[in-house]
Image (cartoon, rainbow, N blue to C red; front, side):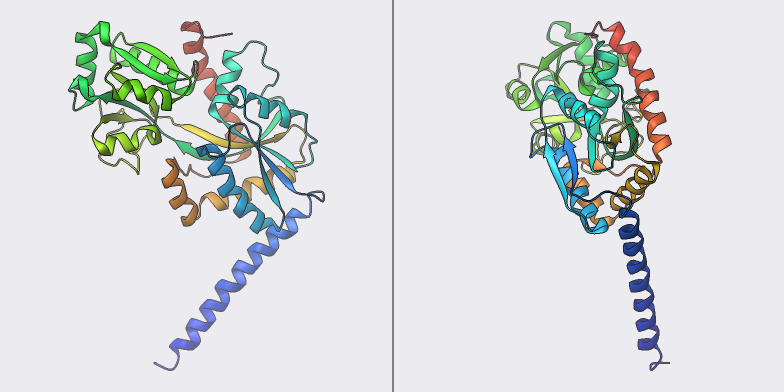
Length: 331
């Protein structure tokens, strides 16, 4: 008995090593369908932000799996729309990938009447690669300890019911409008150019609350300077497991999250689209990526095909368009 165990262990290790080698060889062989040269991931936001950090995590692992150089290129401006325009014009050879998010891929098309790109006409959706949750947070001045208490305070103090949101027509802004509708609170949305600017007024007590990503509020929530009342999605945020979802807090209609995903120029060969879908899905599913995601406030989505991602983009536009139009946010 004792003499056989090391042999079995060696055999098991050899099988695992062979399987890993086979996966790497498959990925390398698939990468041969790409033309020579480095792969560029174009990010529509400045270096150092969460979307940029996610792209670098994926890029590092993709480079290892494909045996190719992957360069993350930042083309910040117009909330990511400049990057989308750049990738739209790029050769459809698989060497230029757009790191898109729900704002530039879903919300911009229903907000800007003369947008220079159509995500379903000008791109090949590849994969939804990271989800992020939205949150409603209240300042200490409201004295609220849960969602019901915060909504009650907003209704009883209409002159001071002001909610900070980053950027007009952003996902946070639209979620704030949806929150006001669902709760019946007549709260005014106060637009800032970013949560860093809004936080100054929030911590000073000049605003009653805010809507932004979970990552924007985690530090303040733990410090007790603000309290997160609820998070979007169907499960609680890993970073704030004590905070209920909107559904648990009594408000329906907040089951979806924001997301980041990858798209290629229209006309990219389907084998290349499928290659990136397969490889990025494998990277996202790894425990190491899950750990790094949690640090950034991301959640790994369920594996999804290019067709499913395209359907989700269209469904998102159909869902948000009525609210954008009703709020008079179209430009």
